Amino acid sequence: MNPNAFRLDGKVALITGASYGIGFAIAMAYAEMGAKIVFNDRTEEKLKEGEASYRKLGIEAKGYICDVTKEDEVKAMVEDIVKTYGHLDILVNNAGIIKRIPMTEMKTEDFRAVVDVDLIAPFIVSKAVIPYMIKEGHGKIINICSMMSELGRETVSAYAAAKGGLKMLTRNICSEYGAANIQCNGIGPGYIATPQTAPLRVKQPDGSLHPFDSFIRSKTPAGRWGTPEDLQGPAVFLASDASNFVNGHILYVDGGILAYIGKQPK
Figure 1 (cartoon, rainbow, N blue to C red):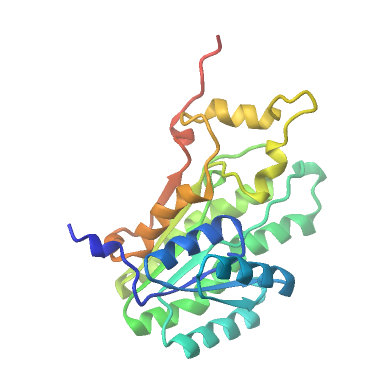
Figure 2: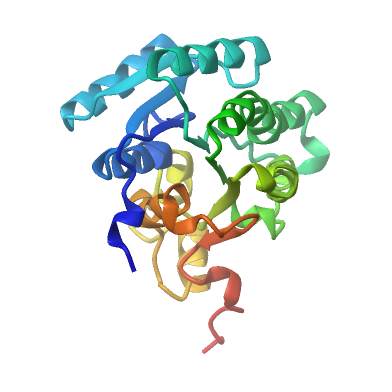
């Protein structure tokens, strides 16, 4: 085996929503493996925070203010990336939101807002990037899916619908553009300790675990929440030449939760 197959030297990677959290951790790993990092955020404030975080680690990252649900903004961003760097090799559709609202209480506009960011945006960004990848003769697209690509749960109807759709978009991009040497795969994180999941990990007034925190630990063979760093190795693999014959798959990084029925009651 050639260990250099995992290197990303000279590659340009666009990671959406990578100012913090999972996207930031993936970008860190890509930079360590030699890639040039490009990311976006919707606000100047968040963009500057992200740029400062990268600089603190000695990573030169170019940021764009871009709403990935707006096709004209995405097209302009991608055009500028290619103009600046000459090519775009890796796309990670990471930007995402969640709204925890019971389905019968959820407004249609809230459902649409989740689907817009979590499903429509990956379509928009992938659509903008694929022609350049075809021209270059190769490309890697990694969609950040979820266990909700496979499962349902109370209060997350929009998120589950969007992430289930993203799984199938991943497979369809593979089917449609695999012949162009474009590999499209997904990563399905388990419950990861990020700002997005922080409300589920707040301790109770008596110091005990949040009920959902306790529930997740009991359902996960690893007995813990994942960290953004747990996703770095899989993300590097799927972005590298080591995965050139891997296409249309969702790699679940969940501590075993999807394979586990749960602990037997005592």
